[in-house]
Amino acid sequence: MDELSMKQNYGALNKNIGLSLSRRVVATVLQLLVVVIIARSLGPEGNGKFAIVIILPNLLNLLVGMGFGPAIVYYVGKGVYSSGEVFQVGLRMAGVTLAGSLLVLLPVLYLAHSILLPSIEFPILVLSIAALPAVQLNDQFSSLFLAEEDFNSYNLTQLIQPIVLLLNLLCLLLFDRLDILNSAVAFTASHYALSILLMVFIRYRLGKKSGMDLLRTREIFFHLAEYGYRAQAANIIGILSRRTDIFLINFFIGTSSTGVYAVASQISERMGIPSAAISNVLFPRLVRLSNSPQEGSSLILRYSLVACGISIVGSCILAVFGKPLISLVFGSAFTPAYTALVILIPGIITTSAGKILANSIAAMGRPGFNSVSAAVALFINLVGNLILIPSYGIAGAAAATSFSQVVKFAIRFRYILLLSRE
Image: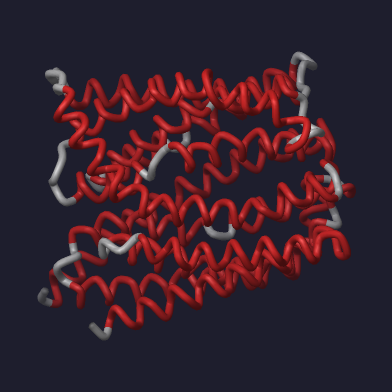
């Protein structure tokens, strides 16, 4: 690639990263408003319960969604399957997920919730589980836009769910009906609102398409699942590693401490916005550059350093102003979250670059290695939380989580170095 073409390539990437970053900032502000409304209206205990409501369907989507999101980006990006074919497979999968939720998940949850989540009322868990088919559809349909590098449509659709949720909560607050049960209804309704809009928009965009026969559906399904399971294993282990602390704090200490720690956890995750924007834009581009390793390596190095630098600056600001900011925004009851937040900073910095490394490895067709590094991090995090939470509370949970993220980054960085020498 000549110098002019390279500059144009970087220019297009920087523009898409800027758009993605802007959308994520807006979404973060919306989500922050949601957290503030819940925290100030329902207190630490209510915030802890709402954190479980949000986490549960997203965690289950990782378990039953089979990694179709990254698989769609990979296969549609390479031109193996069309968007129309993948759209129809996604609709059929959502129907299977809905049936499975009703026939399997709800009965299991009914029998086990008193042991696993004793502080969360069963009707609240039902509403959380009800969001699963919509969460799955939204993940798959949004991936179609990423595969086509249509970041305008992708960014626009990603704002719909937090806007609808915020409006729902404001209405409940206005009419003095804001409690944890109605908040769970608002959360689930916001996901179905996005699903309906995405289905209408994508059908209009694709035009009239004839249906696929069963053999073609099975072929696409199994090819997506084959790649998706390898990629999803890393995502499942990764989110288990990130959420282990939340569930174990809830188990050992209770929902009030969970609510306080959730604030630190949510703030730390928002610090990953720049790297998430960069990795989202880079992934489909790196898929297309899989036969040009030198150009791909240049992109990985350049943008990993950018993400890491932004994260370091943001973390320094958090360390200085985090305590008064938490007290001002969330209230004095959440001030203990600051200690956990500071302990999470090493993990925040390494995770920022680690996201880009993980997508780079997946774009090379080797998503299975991400699972190995994530499994090591999960083991460290689980053992660390079990040892540290009973003695050190949320500070112990933060230490275990932060250390596990540093180890995961080191493993992936080493693997990228080995690949670059091949």
